[in-house]
Image 1: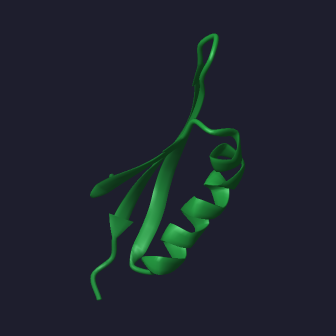
Image 2: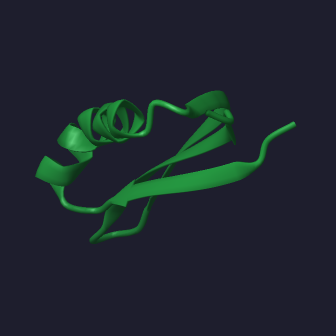
Amino acid sequence: MFTGVKVFTATRAKDREDLGETVTQWLRDNPRIRPVDKVVTQSSDREFHCLTITVFYVEEKS
């Protein structure tokens, strides 16, 4: 069971390379968040490549 969802997405090459660090920093900045699942999705067409990381989480009470 989860209480929230956070979606991270990037289309530019540099942003895709940094996406994992973006997720890690968000988790550091939100210590009450406990991830319970994730989905990594890649989609592309002739010109664009998109990477998406979807994090399902529970926000623990303080």
